[in-house]
Amino acid sequence: MERYDAIVLGAGAAGLMCAAEAGLRGRRVLVIDHAERAGKKILISGGGRCNFTNIGTVPERFLSANPHFARSALSRYTPADFLALVERYGIAWHEKTLGQLFCDGSAKQIVAMLLEEVERGGGTVVCGHGVTDVSHADGQFAVTTTQGRFSAPALVIATGGPSIPRMGATGFAYDLARQFGLKVVEPRPALVPLTLGGDDVLFRELSGVSAEVVASAGGASFREAALFTHRGLSGPAILQVSSFWRHGAPVAVDFLPDRSAEWLLDAKRASPQATLRALLRDVMPDRLANVLAERVGQSGVFAPNDPLGRIADATLRDAGGQLAAWRFHPNGTEGFAKAEVTAGGISTAELSSKTMEAKRVPGLYVVGEAVDVTGWLGGYNFQWAWSSGWAAAQAI
Image (cartoon, rainbow, N blue to C red; front, side, top):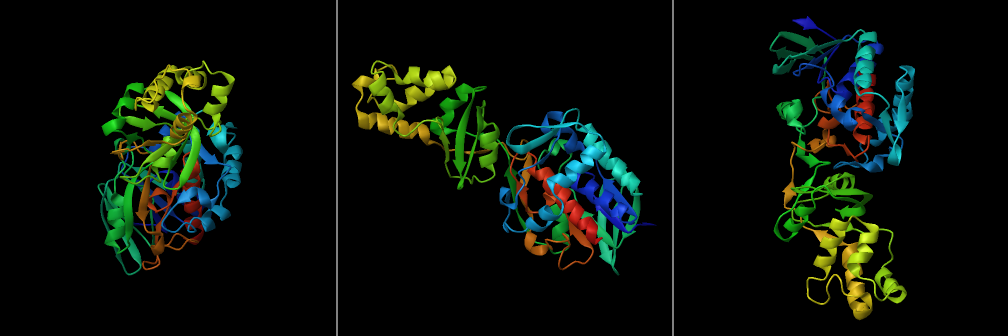
């Protein structure tokens, strides 16, 4: 049995970061992953360019049963810290909307950087090792894989959640947590497209149409693009609110976020011969304008091509309110297969927010997506991976 100072399960963002930092602190570290290569989810992120952090990272942009849990790690290893590492490796980057930082080139550069950091710290990464058993006795964790047995006084769970199973993602972290008596907050898909049924099925006909909206669910609102799909709703605004949405609840969409509540009355006075359909076509894709105009007027009170001058003010006010808070009733999500991340996970109540160590199992650490901490879309989850991995490494 080979002995190490720490064994990290999972060669993803959090695991590699933890291994690199612990190695640079003089620890002998082994990283084990069942996939054939390290960093598989990093490689596909950001369209292959890796949205590696967000300069707007603050604890308030993370979901957790304990909203304060992420504060310590995020404050001690910041986006500026990771950006300094990226620049030290000469990786060109650019800022896109809303503080999102991407590689100019390829996500492969981030994986190569992390692997080089692990190597610089003397760490070892082994892939293609399926873990068959983990045990703990006499202060040592023993890990049995399909290719060997290893032991260490510190074990780091960095195997993520079950989102994107085609990349090899599983619920292994939760099984291991339960084995050691740690509670798990029910995992659910997050940053995931929503599916529509019932009266909303008509909107599936708009597949491929996108528009800038304000989407709201669960007390959160985001102004970004929404995309209609053959199954329902997607796009950044919808992915964002999906993390807050719960089954049975509506999602409200403001299709005209730059218009006042009285805009149709103003339009009626300015151009009484204008129609709702024509006005909507001026500010959104024609196909979407047609459907919304027809649905708003479907009560028979007015038709999409009726001149505004013939429509009562109260009716126009109601129509404006409907367009500003269109209520969709999703019947579900596209599940873990299409979810970018997993909400829920190993309970933060079980862990130290400073070290990520399990309070009841000395030497056991949990980092990254496996923890019940989920960031907004746009680089936040990578920053949590870097920060939590770094925090654990300081304690190993």
